[in-house]
Length: 424
Image (cartoon, rainbow, N blue to C red; front, top):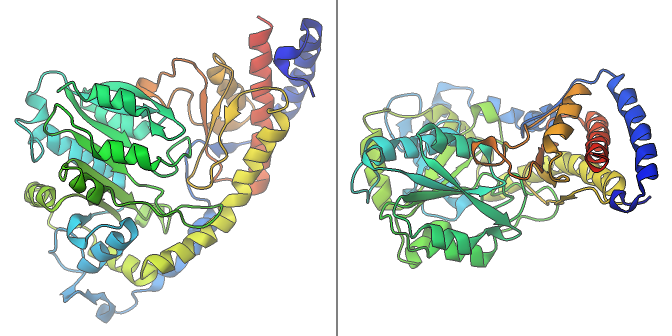
């Protein structure tokens, strides 16, 4: 198999005809496959079915000296906060347990910054002039949309194999208009990399010009290995405290991809000073979140060891799907010199970098052949990938046989768009 960039023009033209024929053939299968979001598949959802029956009697709803069915305990059940503190490596006093979506809590922190300001804000962010936010890219599109919805200027920070380009981050935070940065430190969305120890310590040691600069630390995949053993991580709250930045970070996590995404528990963790400040603001907004659901999770997950055992069962389902994607890319695209990609050991995505200028065309062809994927550009601020190259592959939802069909279509579309580009 010859690399496309080493083929003579006549061979490329013949290859184009062959790939066009293959595209017509897969298009004729009338596929309808969805790989647009990182959703757990039904088999994974079934793993947590036991959570639906852990509370069967009114007497089961008493915990931590209270009736979980009633009002009260704004910060969440103490036992739920303790469980998440064990998972994240922080103190229970630093954990706020909310509803089912960490994205809601992230949005709320940014919203509070705009309406009231944060603990060290000189004024609400809405009263500032221009407000800027650092967005490592490729990154998570919903992060970018949150700050974009408040009219912030999004500053792209290139991602490296060890995390955000810290030289650029350290330079950017000299601007007092820069108010924060998004981070997914473990199995980053979509690249699947784990931030290096050096990167994490440089983040914790930042000296921003803005006194209320905030690290939005989305630890969404903190226990989400599917290949190999659990990879431990340092507590970012402790690192920031040791670096003299105790109030600089808000950490987020949830059970969305541990139990049931539509009925999980999300938390944020922060310094106790930040917690008191946020508690005062939130007390006007909510009396308490769903403590019955929090209690279900405490009774079902029990502790970190039991949670990791459940994640091993998720891994047994996830690994064959990621192997199917990576094996197909290695087999069909690598020998032809088409693109680059990671082979992650956890998380929910594979990040594929196509021949520049072909990502949009590739995904348009996929859609035409019945395979829906995340839009090209979604992994960059404002939905604009300057290279039109990055594609986020989400293998988790389809069964393996459907995934194999989808990735076959994807590889054909990558080849077709590349050939069209090379023969222009």
